[in-house]
Length: 292
Image 1 (cartoon, rainbow, N blue to C red):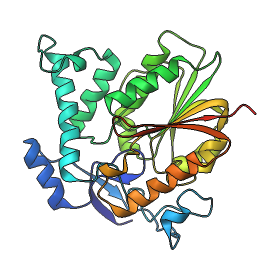
Image 2 (image 1 turned 135 degrees about the vertical axis):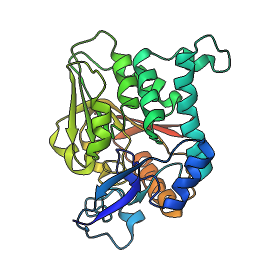
Image 3 (image 1 turned 60 degrees about the vertical axis):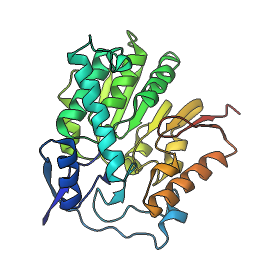
């Protein structure tokens, strides 16, 4: 197959930036060397003629290639700010006496290590700290013998928050799905409890065969923008779905805003779900599946 140059992608199905010029701008503004990966192009899939309207329907398919859908925080400045946040978190771990970022110094060890991986590898789209704390709280509330699904492992930041929330528990299984093998290997390089299971594949296709879950963090186009109904179907009654990056004002790409707006309406208008929109961090929707 032909190869294409791409900036390090997020493990949830979208490209951060396929343009060499903009990637160089990011590197220059950060004062860090640019990091690239080589990826093989996949065969093109048939794209629905009007993707936003069909983004969550079973008939919709992803655009050609594994990283072609625009991702959250698409603007150069917002992506630079996010990488700088990870760098600051990592630096605070090395210098805990610093008072510049006291919140970062209070983060759990495993979470700090995950943010360090994000900063070290130039991974730009891990979940924000506030979203991570929310994930940890929901993980702690998962019932005995429960199951947690994360769609979009990335370098393991969200996963680290989930593991932190579970603490010393050994009765819960955590399944995390990653489309990009190279990004997934970065997450796998960390030490994880034996009850964490890694799956490789497109969340839109994989989620339907993984069973039922009590908590789902939908952080990838596959299973969120694409085939959302499969993700909802995988949720147990009384279970919780967390979807972040839902603040539409953060996204410059019109098509991405339209697709995320479809996701929002599909969740809020689903009579089988009780939803809350939380206006903090990157914008979060929490949806609970009714018990009856």
